[in-house]
Amino acid sequence: MAEGVAAGHGDAPAVGQPGGPDRELSEADFARWYRGRELFEHDVEARNGLGPLFDADSCRVCHCQPFLGGAGRIDMNMVFFGQLAEGPEFTVFPEGLEAPKLSLVGIARREIPPAANIIEQRKPASLLGLGLVDRIPADVLLANADPDDADLDGVSGRPNMVDGAVGRFGRKAAFATLRDMVAYMADVAIGLTLPGDVSVYAAADDDDAVADPEWSAEDFDDIVFFVSHIATPAPAAGGDAATINRGREVFDEIGCGVCHVPSLDSPDGPVNAYSDFLLHEITLAALGNTVQGISTPTEFRTAPLWGLRDTGPYLHNGAADTIDAAILSHFGEGQPAQDRYFFLPPDDRDALLAFLESL
Image 1 (tube, rainbow, N blue to C red):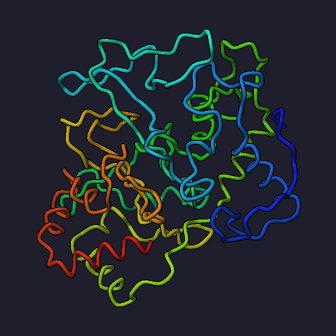
Image 2: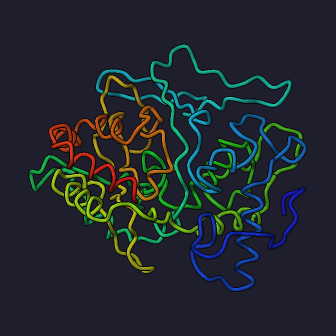
Image 3: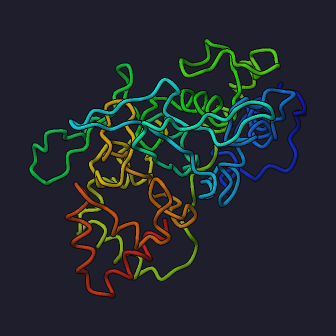
């Protein structure tokens, strides 16, 4: 167990409640889930592994809205950079793809190279329900892929394949498993080292004075177990049922559901995330975004819409203050749906927004 973290059961939310477990857990599994929750909240200090380069001193700092495990504030945006040439050919510098914003006292911060012509911000996304997403079979995700737009509907989602597995996590779907995403963020966001065999993304050593690994395999497994079993966002209570139902119809009529697939099958039952977890051309090249895996600068994974009302500001970088502004920022494959939204009668537009607020 990481130094300074004491195991216990405390006052964790109940099963299915916001921030609580997603299912009834055995006593042993609940203890494991709670230890992971403590680690998630724990403020890491320099004496027990923080840094030397980092963005935050805990997972909680970046995933706290509207409760533990949720989305991040816009001031916690991560910074990505690179060089984009004609082609387009994207170059990742030896310094890496990310520029941690902080460093320990006496250690130089990693600065963005002057030759970088792409600087992109990414807002921390919600982790709620990601355990269910982790367990969606690959063939279910691949069934929605249409890289060549064979059906001629203007939408050509494609998977970001990661060593033969379907990427599904991160803004660019660059991680195929939740374990890999957590290992990557432990390194990049907090500067923690892990045993090298827990993930190919684990950093096994760093340049600080703390002995490596700074988190044990048990620590890592517990925090992954916690993230894997946080309850999914619950639909909003109340609201006008007729208006919300009409908004659901409008959602389908204007084509939102082609990418924001309402439900996907899994061994645990339907995953109502409103995403296909595929890459789509959805933004403008002029906005200057980086790449990961096979993605292009204009491609992003379809953002899940469950819990949307609590994850603003919106888009991958938090540039849209409202859901309306986010819809009007869909380009490329999303342009036809955006056009239909723009020309909706006011009552239908309001109904659609009410439906999205209800998710």
